[in-house]
Length: 465
Ligand code: ADP
Image (cartoon, rainbow, N blue to C red; front, side, top):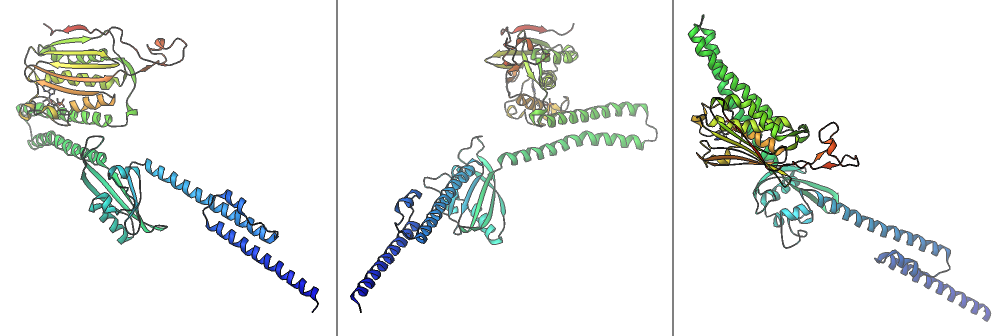
């Protein structure tokens, strides 16, 4: 063979071998880069240097794929962060467990409900919650392959509203088709308030039915008696009719008070917002009670400022003052009772006191008097008109205006009901007295109306001679 041919063949083999080696090196480099976790920028620098067009295309495609994968991973991680922070916003405790009931995720509410020095993740549900009811709810969800629910009553060491006995609803549902295999989510919802509202409603219905039943059965009894006697004598009628009227009036009173309570429990938006003077509301209530005041020879002392502007539902405030003053009179029919109504503005609030020097309220009853249908001394109360709803209406009405009411009593000396309510910021209302008190630049700004004279002006309502 010609020596030149041999040299040419050797050179060609050498070039081929070099190119083969360069290709292999390039593929290895790309494969290394694909497997590595390097940031996208690294790929542009480290790409193999080769003249092959096919190879460059392959390298470019690989680089694009890698960039896409990196972006995908970054997005997944930011989605996860976003999802976790959203789940942290919900008030219910949420835990996600894997097929071994090991916690993979717990939100902020769960960390608060099941406090621990160690992270929740990596520990079993029962270790985190220390409650077999929750673990059993999860087991049942897995067994039946569907969502399960259970109620739970727990005692906690601290709660923002101070109620340490709490009710929870536990829900669990299997999760399929996710990376955690046969996992599940477990949700623990605090339903203490809802349970309490349901209980109060049930008690109200039970008590209301009981209160309505007595006058109704008396009325029915009398009606049957009149129906059976072919010709009732005038004496029978004289005996029956006043009793029937009394019980019918009691029924009407009960229904009216129950309606007021249910209206007050509707959302706040149903309250009327009128501008009025609290002193006027007090004086109007007293006017309505004047016949009783005169009959009982009671003395009424009014200590009111010159003005006490207020924004709220006038009808409810009329009822508040009427109920409190009427109670003082009703419970103390003996002559000579002193009732003081004092209104004091201070620090953007009004303090209103209704004080009497009557028989008072025993300390054992004092904590219960604002409860619905609660009446002190049942025997004695039979002779005094009332439904046991008056003070709960008062409390609801005051609370609807963001105020509070409390009572203190030294029987025989002094019984006081004290209301504390914020003076609302009165926005200038077109056509109202307050419009002219708005800011001089005519913009309707909220203006806090000072009462002018803070020193209460005392007046006295003496019984008619
Ligand atoms: P009622 O409709 O029976 O008056 P309330 O809810 O207004 O019901 O009052 C509850 C109970 O509180 C009354 O039955 C009464 O025993 C007691 N009470 C309220 N105010 C006074 C008061 N000024 N003096 C004595 N007892 C009072």
